[in-house]
Length: 251
Image (cartoon, rainbow, N blue to C red):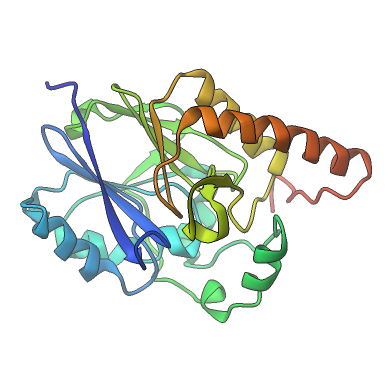
């Protein structure tokens, strides 16, 4: 099969506020399913790119937050495609509710944690493919792998294509939820900030060419590396001071 996988952003909110992604190879794959009620929008965006939504081979969910799995059940009904999600985020998928309280990474997260929409209940579902480790997607038509990247949530994953594009979910974001394009930043929440940073550094060690994120425009790896080095120092100071909040593994 072709080693080239084309990455197409699907805006779910604003131009870059919340993104899903269409991956085009021998067959199409979608990464993430947006907020509740956005399944039809994603379906129609797939069609607008000349792809029959009925040909969709898989819906990959990067993690168990409402803005990434909110329309998964709807999109599965509309396309017939199976859903893949990591076993460690099975609780939110099965209940339609995220783990709370949210653990903010800064002022933006503290503000957003009060937003009622982030506490809505999505339509619950059972994933068709439970991800437990690195998972090859060649059988689903794209030259790519699902890579576990825990930290943002316990079951967070990214998708790495063979040519080096990393569809990174909320491993990293653009500043202010994408309002400052190209500037790396934390998303509003992390369950385990140090664990997430370790996952980000593992992905950077694989030499990605670009990072395609859930909130914002694509990020250049070298700029992310410089940000990650600063973030390591900041988190170390917080950890030493006993001010770094982390969700327990079973929470």
